[in-house]
Length: 505
Image (cartoon, rainbow, N blue to C red; front, side, top):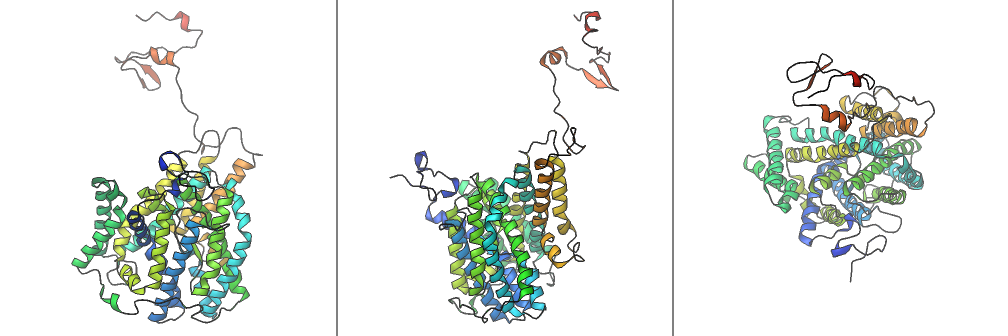
């Protein structure tokens, strides 16, 4: 019996191949190996927000550990919902879900205002429900995401993540004594070299697992040189179930909810970009219905996450890069990663093992991963038509605008908090600018010049075949004149003057 398409009930293609690339089913061992690679790729990103928020809330190490376990558990459950999908929820694409960085600054601001962690949880619940209600609007914006916009966003995602990789390579914590040391950066460089060598010299399977194997190699080397510490793995419980509302019932404060709604708008924008990006990489159809299902899964996960002591959920851009670099497009691989995250959330001891992987090792692998995202965006931009239009200025202005908060993180500090929250994200900045400029130049045609500005690409140069046949070896242009190999000038004439020229023998 032929396998059926998971979403539409369509039969698989010939030879047992799935109708959609993301529906491919790999052997169980490979599925979990690749899934674990996804977990390692995003682990540092998913534990950083609870560390920051827990510290801002004045929690002790035990409570912060509870927050981390909760974020792992909820992120895994959200990943399963996003990849496997149920009716109306889940894009069924290889997207890893986790706590979004977009809300960290807003949550710490709520805490500093005296609201407490309960106000943070209440704001997340209320804003996520509002986000769930407005997802149909966001799903309709796909017509405003042609390759010129999509390519800008994908490229910016990769470029925006590069400071994260650099920070990891330096050690991850600016307060550490060895932050930016030669040993940290050297360990990152060793891991990077391992990724490149395994990609070039290994078999197809080894090449696809190059990130995971390089991380393992880098970690083992770090143990040898004393830069990895696994002594704390045995401390704390081995198994722990998540406790609903462990920090008390949420409270709902209007100001906190309003500020969190801005975060939800940013999250919706970034998740839409990630869905389109992974769809481009997987080479599968992504329509407004699929985007809506993905956004609803995002918002439902975010609304329920505070029940289990976690925060807003979003697709992780770094894992989009992993899909691109490995070429493993199966959503079931990412589902396996989600299951591993759930287990890590239930088994804190396993989480402590993964947490012991040195940050510089993750930084070395991250350089390749995040660079691959940018390269995917450049590949998309290569498909754009730049002839006799303003697409080049759209790309130039949008990427430049998106790089502002990366090049100057304090650029928007004097702006209103709502504006800073939106545009402090390079991804959101580039997406907003690209969408608006695309509408201005490509949808609202009134006022566009017949001959575009100097930013547009010059017309394609051509030469007729009969003209090409007249040229000989050594003919060249010098000082505006056409010369032969001996430096003698060749007459350039109009069609009418051609008859008066001596015959060339």
